Image 1 (cartoon, one colour):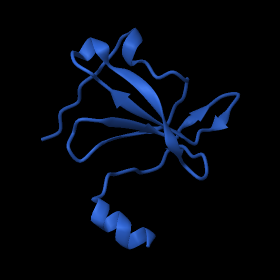
Image 2 (image 1 turned 135 degrees about the vertical axis):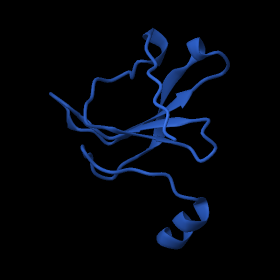
Image 3 (image 1 turned 90 degrees about the vertical axis):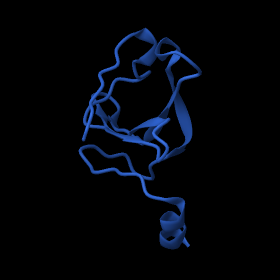
Image 4 (image 1 turned 60 degrees about the vertical axis):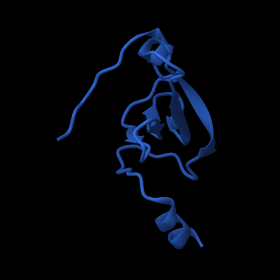
Length: 91
């Protein structure tokens, strides 16, 4: 079953304007990531934003990650994989 939940409001709006980005949840389903995308004027985006909710849904905000894509991109597929698989691929 897939459940979509629309979150709106000043605290949870992305700090940058972009379209065609991907959102992926962490394996424990406690964090949401907004990856890449496109914005007019800036082009393809490399940054990754991480949701941070310290309590109630009204406290949620986006934090820019120190990690970013090597190349900015839009309209791509993103998925989470276990650390063990990432270690095998990257090492």
